[in-house]
Length: 171
Image (tube, rainbow, N blue to C red):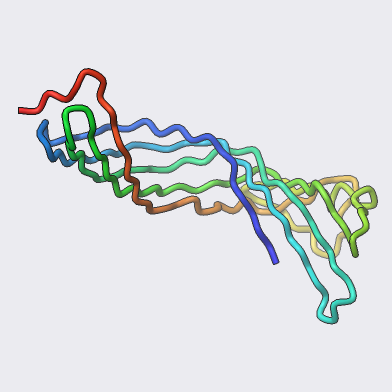
């Protein structure tokens, strides 16, 4: 089994287009999205006979994520101070980490992280990797693999409330 989670701060500069003012105001928002994510994961392997269990905790980091984001929505004036905002969002983004580091490795519940070589602990992702088939990799060097883009795309619906100090001027 495997599970993972992403931690990141994203910056989303946007342009907002609106159809003026009123009690019901449609809008569209679009722009770019960029971030510096870290993916943390946990992989558990059980052999076919339940005789051994291997658990690996790892982190993929470095590298930036880029993409496009946008939304369409509606502002609804509820009274002189409160607006309801509804929004359908999309994000089209990918992330290509530069490295993967094993942070914990256990076999049948025993920590054997200290027994791993650098090749087993760290992976460097590159645009191209030259394979020397038949040559055993050096244990004191990190593994090299071809960089892969991870999809971070999504569609979501948001609803919120805006409180306007001093009231809303709607005619």
